[in-house]
Length: 276
Image 1 (cartoon, rainbow, N blue to C red):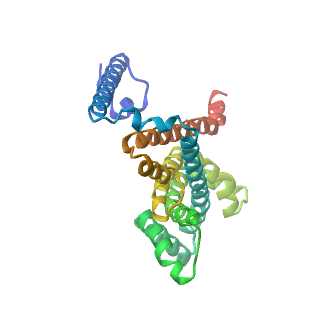
Image 2: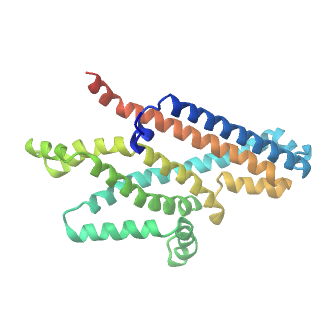
């Protein structure tokens, strides 16, 4: 039996031996995670972090309402930042691929600048530099706009990778039908490019959700900011952050599941065509 190539091992269905190794590795990883969890719980117990006085306030409705209000703030900021990123990213892509040299250069400069500057620095710019210059905005926009613009630069490159993955024959076929450049892009190329980049776009959305934790800089009422308030009021650092970590994990898991459903739907017509 010849050795399998790397591509076969990564992308094709595993043979019996490989499947056995995968199951063994999965079992070992699960056992290690369970052991780690037991060790963590034991250390928490020894340190007194599992005492009722650190947890009893979670039995109050007001605590969960406060956390829920922070989660709503996180979602409001993340969804608007994602909308900005997807829209402005498309504008950046159009400029990046423009045949007009000055527009292309400006787009490349903006993309590289926004990708290179950390979100935290942009937030500080909106918080400390813009107000003295007369540009005042709410804490919501001080956190949402910098995150949205920074993500837009990354999304533009994700879009471009998807566009470059579309076979050139698609554009040539559209040109033979007398479609203009914009018509070819928006009706033929870009819809196909989206199928390739859905997982990458969703990973950026997960990053956007995590970046909203910088809301503490501008005292925006998102989940982590509200968690800090609970920690200060009840002196319960570990339990609060454990609960918040679980909430973030469930939220990002829901986003990943939605991504899988969307990806299957986008590829469904292609699968039907192959069967036909």
